Image 1 (cartoon, rainbow, N blue to C red):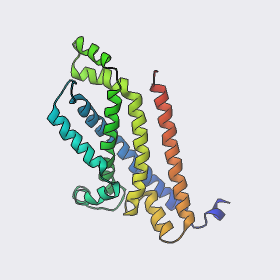
Image 2 (image 1 turned 90 degrees about the vertical axis):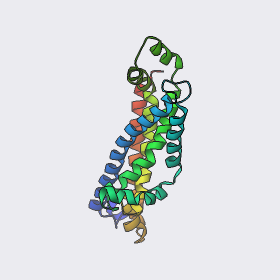
Image 3 (image 1 turned 135 degrees about the vertical axis):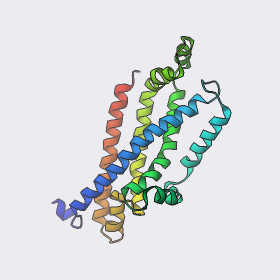
Image 4 (image 1 turned 90 degrees about the horizontal axis):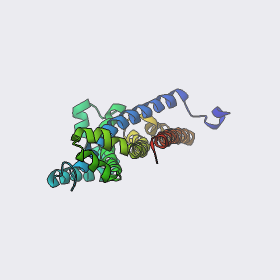
Length: 222
């Protein structure tokens, strides 16, 4: 039945492309999570009225985040070609997509981290400071635990965006379902291949959203 609906789909290639998409998404989500939290914490802590208040540093980080968050991903890939070739020696394959994926997603997530930190009751932070808590203690015992539901919700949204980014990266040879849908589906007029690749991408997105929602609901104490 499935073979009749999708006669042109080569399932071994489809599976290989799915693994490549999951690989690109997984690695970039982990890197984005840590880089985004660092950038988000710096944005929050150096803002006016906070522990490391520093207008100059805050503006520099904010400008960096705004610039890379605003560049369309397909253009960002092209801009990072020299850096990608220098680091990896190639522009083809799933590893070659990782620099652009991380640079494109981390600033986006950093803003979501900053927003999550801003939602924390300032009274909780002030109470910790009044008791002589060190900055590291405030970060690990107050800021991150209190904002964790927002951080998980944010990385869920970012992970879904990254799945879409991998599809765009696939068009220029990064591998994955996007590459398969473009080369085997679109260019050869095999709509069933494109449709199956799309269905698998949708399943991945739904699974990520489901897992993110479950974890967020368990962490949310409200």
